[in-house]
Image (cartoon, rainbow, N blue to C red):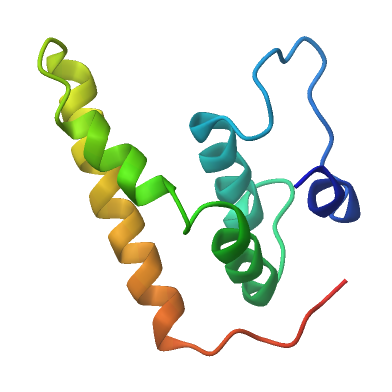
Length: 101
């Protein structure tokens, strides 16, 4: 994953302590790829999503949604799960574009 980030010019922010594969960090990276300061072509967004989030993030949010003792995290899990379902369906509607640098 670090190679993918470096190839896109994305570096760890000074003082950032979370690992790059932290769910919140990955969501922040996707937001940047979609329209933030690191905005990239849709094909690169899809490639990053498919490679680094799609295999596991839906299950993560579904598990979080079942957090018995934390109402906030249940709600965050629900929003995250629904958003990832939308992203997955959106990317499925368009073929993955040719690999871009």
